[in-house]
Image (cartoon, rainbow, N blue to C red):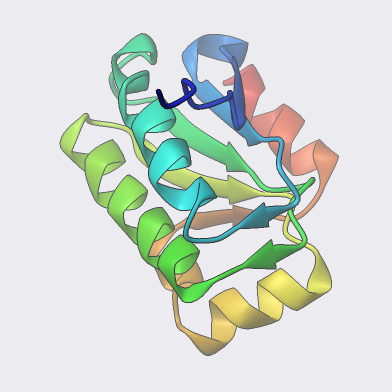
Length: 121
């Protein structure tokens, strides 16, 4: 019998946005499908016209499958009428997102102040 997947994402709703904080250190083949499922199932909790903010501040490693998952989440967010946002990338992950040209698909927040400004709106 298979155990239920643990929560890899913590959710909050600052200012009507959906903030999805990934709380595992890596997003690989085991984590990516669970993270995708957990976030997609909650997209309806954000107000239309607001943002899906994916907080990766606790993540240090993302596999190619993980990158594909974030692209898929971006597409699902846009279908739900939400602006896709990524927050909290460390230097290594920021370089990876730039190399793979994934940063063009998201609004990139680099500081807590930028996050506060977005969620205050």
